[in-house]
Length: 184
Image 1 (cartoon, one colour):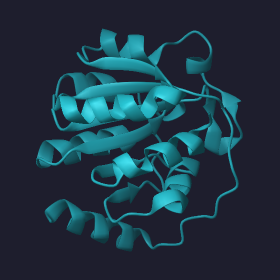
Image 2: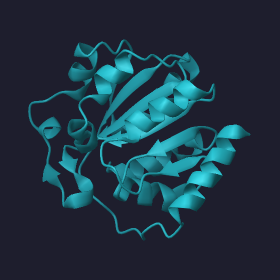
Image 3: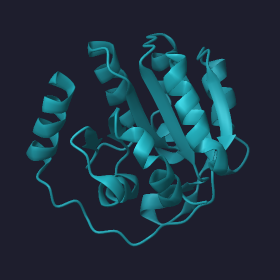
Image 4: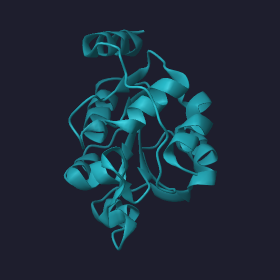
């Protein structure tokens, strides 16, 4: 499976959650597959979906799922020890690990070589880390939500992109409708 196929499969699970989605193609894919006011699409700032997701989770009680990529997490390695040291049991970080920088042309990442993001998260002190294959993502995500424990999920999948339209919503509109969803 590729990232867009994973997003399509888990869209019904995401629908009842607050979602912070990684920049570029992941946000465009999720927007095309199942646009929801509870989805916050990152339109810039590579590597910060996980940090923003943690901040939102710490500020309220609803379940927050940050969908990040291996390339973005590698870009902001400080996010994993920050998450480990600021536990929010309503937070799930789902790292879709396709071993590539998908939005910029599928250049390989170190996660596609020797670096295990699950091992790195564990070494940083994250206590509930699971690595799953793409086909097992849906059940693993449901289990993470049901556990009511902060969870780091590393979802291993194939590299590849589909053609998607850009998000035409104004960033202020995306922010405002997400803030309304958080408040409701």
